[in-house]
Image (tube, rainbow, N blue to C red):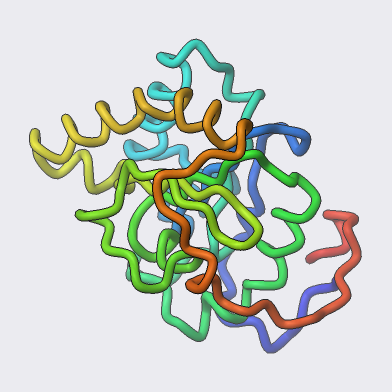
Length: 198
């Protein structure tokens, strides 16, 4: 799929990085200033916390995949708009199809609501959900964790639960079944060669 001139946002493309044949897919909201500059996801303070937390589980960054819903930075680091999320949806959809992870970890409410439209991040982070297609384990965004001790402690404790959640997902178990909440996907043919995306 080649770049459309109608796509919103004209900053640098930040597609994602990691192992495209992995069990765990982390999905944030949108690139920030540092990500736009380096053209890599999660490289600022929040990204450093995420990557440090991955390593502290005994995992390697190369064993997971990290991306965002929106592939370009919104102005002034504002939240992505519904229109921007919808515009970049085909790219994320194809990423997920190619990677086919055992578990998806949405980071923050925008990413979580992409998969679980009626979920609340404060209530539902750290729970393992099963939608029609995927196991979803939402977490606080690491940027939110940096804003206070309580949020940081919650982020750390939830991150420690991720290996157990992954094992449950591999075994087909879930704490909450949310088959009716998954948004219907638009049928769209997309080539799976990354360089042709943009």
